[in-house]
Each structure stands twice: as structure tokens, then as C-alpha cells.
Length: 185
Image (cartoon, rainbow, N blue to C red):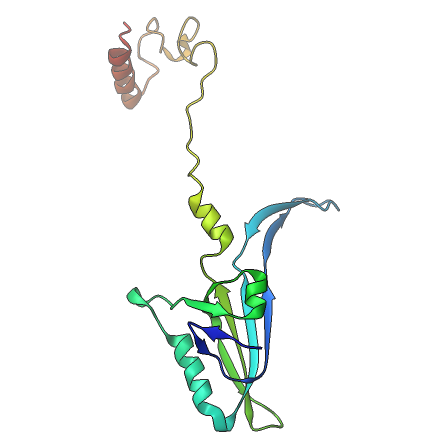
């Protein structure tokens, strides 16, 4: 199995790449035994990579660490173009290092057991979400009169017949502005 990040081969023996797609959902059953779930979207796909690096090839571990520690402009993690069969099968093109890199000494052989996670960057669901227009809210109105206007609305004195004794100072100012704009008496 080959893994290239921006054309640089990740060197190691017995490399295994595991791809993962997490689907967010919330349980809607409450205290019942229902199985309904609320779909909350797809999270970025991840590639978990495990490999062995012999002690004599410590330069390969150093090269991997420099890839993991690389930053782009502004101090952000560097985004890599990935070439790997498993990544291609999952549709992953760009990745960033995520959740750290671990290297532990093997119990029997003179080598490190290395594991790291690559998280997808600019995924297809993320692109689709970015292209969607923000849903704009529109004012809705129904037939009839607005609440508080017209005959019989005088409980708070807002119909003009009961005076302004039920209004606070701010409400009185708003009523005067409303009357001025609306052209009412």
C-alpha cells in the first residue's frame, strides 16, 4: 500500500489504511423504544494509518513528523493532496493531520509502531453546503388586521380611545412613531 502526501511518500512497513465516514444522528425516541433518528449530516471522512518504522530508518519517522507539524500561511495546519487507493475509493482528495501522531516502541522487534489520523478537508458535503444559498426569512402576513389594531383592542389603550395610561414610556414613544408613519390619528 502506498501513501503519498503532496507527492512525498510516507515510508514504512506493513502499512494499513482504515477509512471512516461518521454519520451524525440524534435519537428522537425519548423514553420510548422507538428507533427514529434525526439525521444531522456527514462529518469529514478520516483515514487512520498504522505502519512500522524500523529504528535504523529513523529518518522516515522524522520526515513523517515534519509533514505532521507543517503549517500553512496564518499558522493553520497544512492541507495535503493525498494519493492512496483507500482514500480514492472513499473520494478523499485533500487531508490534514488530525488527532496527533503516535509512535511507540515495539515489544519484540527493533521498530516503532506508528499511528496517525488524516481528516478530510474540503469534502463534497462541505462544498455542497457552501454553495447552498443561505435561507432567507420572509415576512409572512395573513388576512385581517394586525393584533392590537381596530375596534375592540382598547384593553391597553392602544386604540386611541382609552388614552395612553396603560403604556410604558418606551411603548408610548413607539406608538407616536407608529401613528406618525401610519398617518393615523
